[in-house]
Amino acid sequence: MDLCKQQGWRTWLFPVEALGTTGRERRVAIQRLSQAAERASSWLWLRREEKSWRQSTNTQ
Image (cartoon, rainbow, N blue to C red):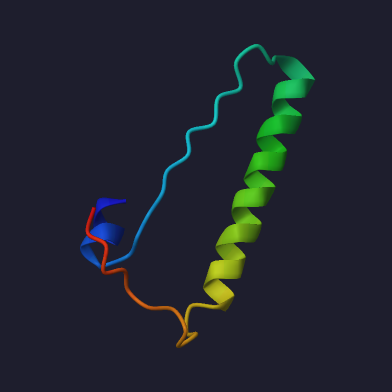
């Protein structure tokens, strides 16, 4: 995340906890989270050249 911020991007980190889940329920949750992350990554990659995206001016 630090590298992204150094490049002028605004970043967020949302921790995900799977407390209390075990076995199949946990595997399914991890699989769904992984698929969602992959879709988001693909979406970003496909739109990486869009001119409407600007670097953040917020340095917080």
